[in-house]
Length: 250
Ligand SMILES: Nc1nc2c(ncn2[C@@H]2O[C@H](COP(=O)(O)OP(=O)(O)OP(=O)(O)O)[C@@H](O)[C@H]2O)c(=O)[nH]1
Ligand SMILES: [Mg+2]
Image (cartoon, rainbow, N blue to C red; front, side):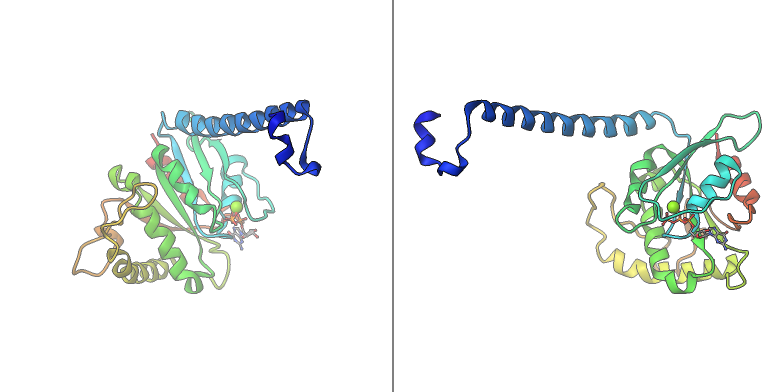
């Protein structure tokens, strides 16, 4: 090493013990990275052993976190945009085992995380802000398409509940109108997505054609049971959601 020192600019030359310190620090950083990677994967893998999870998904501000708090504590809370998932065990039926409920952030860069939980999910609630549906139809349809074409959603025929939230607002749409809007938008989206039918995403999900070719898209044509319910998480009006969750839980 000392024979090579004359090749290094003087300002950059450091003592041998400093090389050792740098080496140890680098090794510690690499080790910390490995431990972090293993712990994240291990925790998800250990959860994969059971299928007792319901996911709360949906666009930002749909009301997922308010609903999650309502379910887990019966309280209404003030929220901010979620940057990571909230998890809780919720007793849906007195005397029965608790169900694990995960609130997946709706942020564009974080919502893909729903797919990490799909292997342990037995049901998905897709929360919609019923007062902004007409402005968000395309984004809603895109996210819903991703969920419906997820390989676990398909192979396990995971039931989906479209929770039409914020029904307390005068501007909110009724569930029938929301269903019609989503079916129309998914119908359009199918054309674009089916153009890429032979490709696979990084999760190994194939682009799936939803419904029947030559027929307008309808949720009824899916193998998954898809239901629509109106609710208001803010007003504690989520009994229907709870009943649905209990009905699909083990
Ligand atoms: N009027 C009304 N407002 C609601 C209802 N549910 C939630 N909100 C409000 O909607 C806003 C967003 O609610 P959150 O629960 O934080 O939304 P989120 O889906 O978790 O959003 P992200 O974390 O960004 O994905 C908050 O200001 C809530 O108070 C509801 O049923 N009615
Ligand atoms: Mg949230």
